[in-house]
Amino acid sequence: MKKSNLSIAIAGSSGLIGQALVDALRLRGCQVKQLIRSHPQKDTSKEVYWNPISGHIERVGLEGVDVVINLAGANIGDKRWSPAQKELLFQSRIKSTILLSKTIAKLKKPPGLFLSASAIGYYGNNLETELDESSPAGEGFLANLCQEWESATGEAEKRGIRTVHLRTGVVLDKQGSILAKQLPFFKLGLGAYLGSGKQQISWIALQDWIAACEHLIFNSDLTGAVNLTAPNPVTNFEFGKILAKVLRRPYKLHIPECLILWLYGEMGRTLLLEGAKILPHRLVENGFEFRYPNLFLALQACISK
Image 1: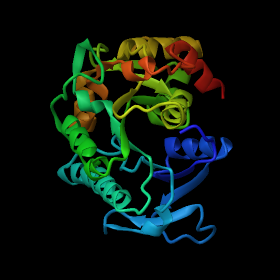
Image 2 (image 1 turned 30 degrees about the vertical axis):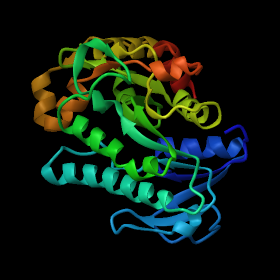
Image 3 (image 1 turned 180 degrees about the horizontal axis):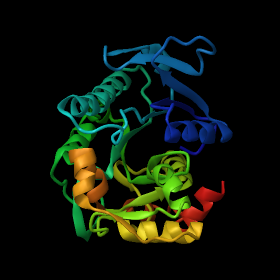
Image 4 (image 1 turned 180 degrees about the vertical axis):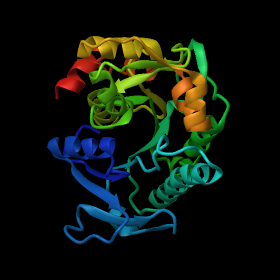
């Protein structure tokens, strides 16, 4: 899609990543419609009502859009993974994706592109092996969730809509994600590595995440899974060491695995003590250039904003 004034509908636009994407696309001249869960009070040309839980969406608001982007889903690290929380995480992703997929597949003029969120949790836990989009799915709750999440786009794909699964890594921005939680401690000289410190963190600067999405929209014909991670993942220990260096603070503390498991249970094990070395092969082969391939430079840019 070469034109810059595309009509783009975005679900899950109220979060850090979603709002940043809305702002960036509008700066490019795109007409952005935000899917919201309350009836529009202002400009209905910029808002579309939907309710994924009840299965309702104002389909007329999506007629004629060029691109649909799905970022909807409850925060994966918000609470311990009780059975109820797991169900919320599952339903908030699967139901919303199925609803969007079925809806756009039935449009008279369906969009040419459907970007649907996924996560690198798809690959499970792997300390050593470098993984890319050709690697098999891992095991565990998060890997299973990601597989179901990606399968939920089936109706759109059957209709012939170009569909891309955005397998997102740890997005870095001082206003959200892991960095926002770590900064106050590291600034006080209380930075610590977690567990063994050997678990991999496959990260990406928010600016590069946005740029990668724009690349997929305007300069690419890729379909299927695309890893949105920087080309240089690091271990948990290395991440903390580099962050402490950027802040010019000491880095001598350690939080043992048993404490993390006591505080956060399965969620803590999966998100804090496990990880995988994920590489963005398809993006790089498709000509995308990272602005921040280096973690030190990425953290400097994030913190100085």
